[in-house]
Image (cartoon, rainbow over all chains, first blue to last red; front, side):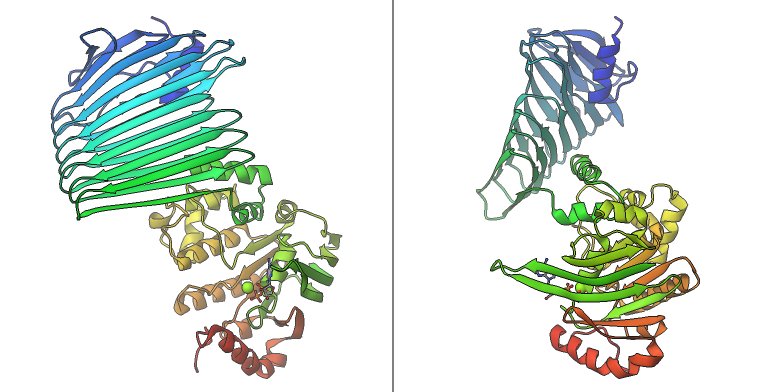
Length: 307
Length: 249
Ligand SMILES: Nc1ncnc2c1ncn2[C@@H]1O[C@H](COP(=O)(O)OP(=O)(O)O)[C@@H](O)[C@H]1O
Ligand SMILES: [Mg+2]
């Protein structure tokens, strides 16, 4: 299977892929796998009912990466996939997911990715997911990721989820279970423009003693766009949880941020911080005094903020 | 080099009334000289700097840079023409590293120089280059990075606004000494240091005392420092409630 120039451009935008990577890989193009390969330590195969993938990373695997990007270039396609990722005990691995949509039509292109991730005891996972849309007509690019992650005892996971741009509508749902001494960090960065809408709902259950969770959300809303961010931390044992939501609001955009803390144990320490506002005038003036134009200063601040 | 001619500046206060902050200033900063601007808090020192940089717009008068009237130029244009200002209270940036900001300050300077200037302000480059200019830095660290940017840019006129604030006395003495000696030996450039530092003021070529939006005294250290020192010290102490940077001899 040869990938077209457009496919490769989208892959590059979402997963820094310039050529087909070595190692474990699944590239899904317009609803079907076009390249699939396993590595000695990471098996990539279909699930039982053929609705998606099972990716298994062997216990003890060190420093390996699996790529599972999705590309939609066929206008009007409604794609749905169920993927399961199992990171074996003591393994240390990176999963690079992400979805790029190119839609030049007036029909809706949509991808729903339902991911279940299990990080076994003592394992370490880094999960990267970038979303990107482009196209010249009115056809909406819609992305609805659902992620359920279990962080077992002593395991750690870092999820970095970025919406680069061009996604018209997104409803993101993330549910996490963190067990004894497990640690979870979720970084989310969303940019919305024009008439776009984004909704993110994160729920973290800290179920074991000594579990930690951290959610860092950075949002930029421009034009008439709207973002809704909800993060709930539920502490069921002696644990540590923190939610931080920082948002920059421009033009006529709107942002709603709803952090929720629920402690069910006297030793659960849960905190949140939220700040929404326009770019600070002092920051603009400072960068302009170094010779940047106002527009360059705005771009620099936004790029840094969403980096 | 830089001339302020009859500069007035008004702002509106919380009640919507216009209040005059700068009241008809005439100042000429010359090339190859280092100026100390001092005076009590609220006197108008920062306002002068911001009017020169274009952050505050003056309501009357003219500003000339090398005989060109720059009164109507934007901050960006003034920066590009050779005006530089190290903020009294520099803002923080989430997601920009110290290296990013130094690169903006001087796009052509290579890494070697960035390191050198960080060392000059007393910061170890290895520890700081990749750090975020956000919440994790102390006030003193932010001030040093602010100074490094201006030293690196080396514009025609460099204005340092209370560089001593938050920086330990020993380092700042050394650092200001460095600024003074660097600019005194440079016939093409001008440095203006807004400061209360008693060791540094006498090292400058000229002292300007700003109080109530006007210049109340001006001259070489020999001419005026002994006359004004006690008076300023008193006022500064009153406003800082005893917490002054002047050293006790
Ligand atoms: N943006 C502003 N709005 C209202 N008042 C201001 C503003 N900037 C400065 N001032 C007032 O102008 C006076 C001079 O301030 P400033 O120039 O910061 O003094 P200095 O730097 O000498 O301490 C003070 O009374 C201050 O409160
Ligand atoms: Mg001041």
